[in-house]
Length: 447
Ligand SMILES: Cc1cc2nc3c(=O)[nH]c(=O)nc-3n(C[C@H](O)[C@H](O)[C@H](O)COP(=O)(O)O)c2cc1C
Ligand code: SF4
Image (tube, rainbow, N blue to C red; front, side):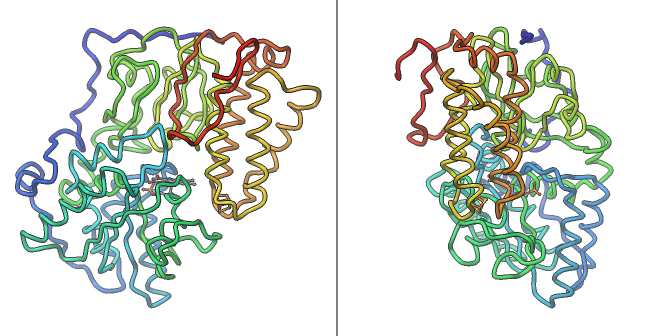
C-alpha cells in the first residue's frame, strides 16, 4: 500500500474561525449569553405548523452531523407534517450519546458550550411545535452532569419556553441508534425497534419525534441567531457550514477540531499537528463508516459527496489515522469483534451474521483463514446488509468490507500466512473489556 506523510505546516491552515468551539464558556449561562447573545424569540409559531426557523434551517443547507448527513430542515418539516396528520404533539430528542468509540466531538462540544446544544433543542422544539425536549447522553459519561448543571442554570434564570429534560441512557452502541433512543425515552428500554415507521413519524411514545445529534442542534442555535446566509458563508456549497472532527491515531495532536465542510484530510491532519510518520489508511466517519487509503483520500474534500471516490464518508466526524507499520486487518478484526458484541441480539442476520464475520476476520487477521474462507466471508458481507431491524449490521459490514478493499495487498499476504506489520500496539480504540482479541499474528503468541 502507498504510504503518505503529512508534516505539520509551519502555519496550520485555519480556513475560518470556529463557530461551535470558538468561545468555550462551559455551563455559565451569563457568559454564554455574553458570547452568543440571548435565546432568539421565535415569532409566528402556530400550533400544527412549522415555525419560520424550519424554513431558515432548510435554506441554511444544514445536514445532520450524527452520521447520516440527512438535511435537517427537511427532517423538521417531516416531523411537523406527521404531527399534523396524526394530531399528536411532537417531541424533540437530542442525541448526545456519542456511541462511536473513536469519537469525542459531542462530549467536547457539550463540555465547552452546553448551552448552544440546549438552545438548539429549545428552538427546534418551538419550531416543530413540541413542548418538551429530551437531551440524552451516556450513563456514566461526563456529559450528563454537565447538561444537568446547565439546565439548572437556565431554570435559575427563569427557565425556557419548553421543558428540557436530561436523561442518562445505557452506555451501549446500539442504544444511541435513533429508534433505540426514542424507545429509551418513551419506554425506558434502549433497544432498537423495527423501522418503518421512522421516528419522525412515530418515535417517543408513538409521537412524531425530531431526533438529532448534539452538534446538529448547536448549529440550529446559530442558524436561529445569525441566519441561513451566514451559515452558508463557509464550507462546501452542497453541504455548508463547519463540522467537528474527532482526530485520532498517528497524529501529533489528537483531539477535536472544527473545520469548514469540504476541508481536505491533508488540511485536517495539518491542524492536528501533522502525522507522526508514514500512514497507510484512515477510518472515516466511525466504525459504522469505512476505511480509506490515505493516498487516495488525502486531498478529497470532507463531505459525503467529496469522500465518495475513495469510499469514505465524513459520517460522525471521525478521522482515525493508521500508521504504516500497523496491520489494518488486525485493527479491523478488533473493531468487528466489538461491533458483533454490540448487537442487541434481536435479529438473526445481525446476531449470527456479525458473529460469523467477526470469527472469519479474526482468522484472516491471524493469517489462519484457509481454503474458501475469504469467499465465505465476502458472501456473508453481501447478504447481511438491510436484514436487521436497525442499521447497526449495515455499518459493521461496510466497515469490514472496506478493510478487504483498502488492505487488499495485506489480505493476500495473510492468506499466504504472513503479515507485514511491525507494530505491537493497537490504534483504534475499543471500550475496555469488550474485546478478547488481540489477534495473534503469524509467529506471535496471544499477549
Ligand atoms: C448503531 C448506531 C449507533 C448510532 N450512534 C449515534 C450516536 O452515538 N450519536 C448520534 O448522534 N447518532 C448516532 N447514530 C445515528 C442516529 O441513529 C441518528 O441518525 C442521528 O442521531 C440523527 O441525527 P442527525 O440527523 O443530526 O444526524 C447511530 C446509528 C446507529 C445505526
Ligand atoms: S439489527 Fe442488530 S442491533 Fe439492530 S435491532 Fe437487530 S439485533 Fe439489534
